[in-house]
Image (cartoon, rainbow, N blue to C red):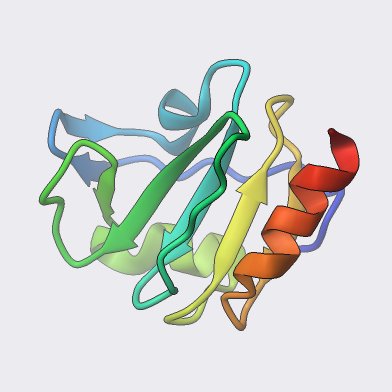
Length: 111
């Protein structure tokens, strides 16, 4: 996976609202940031970004349990990976190192 690729879907993700697919969670006019494992806290204000935390179990409305590592496998994610998905469903950027400043720079550049 790399920037410009179509974001792959993953089904059967456990959320606080039951099982959903990734496309269900990313639907809308906003960017979506997948934050895997122990990725650092992300502050992307004032941009319209939904941050989804991918971990062992959902404890809040924006948490996803990646049972079976469907998301991690689809995105080649490690414990600190950040994946920014554009509103059109394509990958804007991926940072395996959890580079929050790079995410902010990307969002700033597109205005």
